[in-house]
Length: 500
Image 1: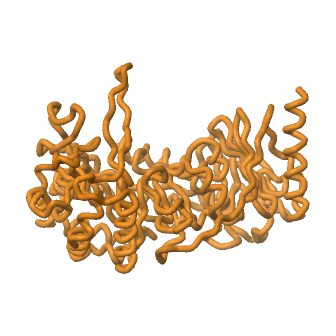
Image 2: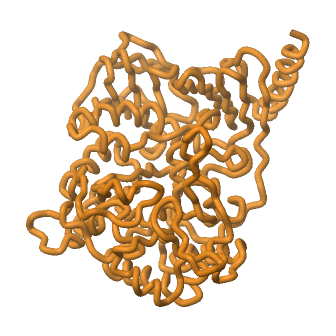
């Protein structure tokens, strides 16, 4: 009991001094039971190694899964070595554009980036290290060359505030790839000291250092950029960009796990640092072409501990040291995990549209996810982080300007200077990408005549208009009234409304 009290007193003193400096009030609007730990944000020394084309903290980034290459059981065991020529198609380019249109309507024109997965050969994880032919199964009927369909999608998506680019892999090498024999002859595949070729979790592995030294990675990236307008998109996603080789391991209990080993290719004699330095060169090479690189995750893939600034966005983001030392504009994530969700997360469009082929249903789920995650994240990312308070039952995010959040039980509550903006199921959040006079209201279960205080910084006149928002667009909405600095709204279940 005494220890618990000491924790709570220390937390209160820390936060009181923090908020006294900003002039914010009602700092205790959110509390956690039991002992807590306060982790103060301290900006790390940071310098961009590249020149980001986007502010990823204010851009909704997702993938769309087009197709998965299939594999025969005998090739699955410990490794995937080649696909069997079959594939499971989730959507084609035309459907992808319909998804992008619907997402644009629901995100109210928020800047977006979409990476296409399975656009090549027989789908996802097919024929690497080559990526020079389109997937016939995702093409439009009117296009003889599937890459023409991908170009069409990249061009058309611009009308919907969306940059479309590619999901690629530079590490894997399948033995049925058009490039496999060439890469064997060039001696750029990872090998043991005795010359045995290394198989990782999936496929053989390319030695970054050897491929860079021989100019082959430059050659294949040049060719890809000649085939598709990646420079125009200004971004690309590199999957499985590991700093070490992942090996499958089966424990005594029969469970599978992954063990990493470096350097990547003992045969070539490169050190771990030389492998990572080759990755630096690859990212800088793409940067020189005007292309940002985002990657799969922080752990085992980042360069320089994040402070060197090579990757502005990670698909999987669970690095608390980054969240507590780097601004969201310096490093952010798509999928955020654990206590870091107090700083905001994002709706996973890839998983959602892959598992829900009924677009009407998928858009309803997307709307809910967007309002409860990405809508809030884009707002939180505009405020400097001050601390992350962690307890057994959840976490609290402390931001500048009196903004505070609580992540508990899978729900994110938000307040500004003590006024609730989200209680986890109902919310009224500023849509900052539309200016300082726009708010989005959403409710899971609906409510009648709920009165909200307009968040400070938002200018909303009594002549403001409102619209119900769906994947098909907007319709006039009149179940609201504005009185002074308050807005009273009536919402039906799962209704999303823009007030502007």
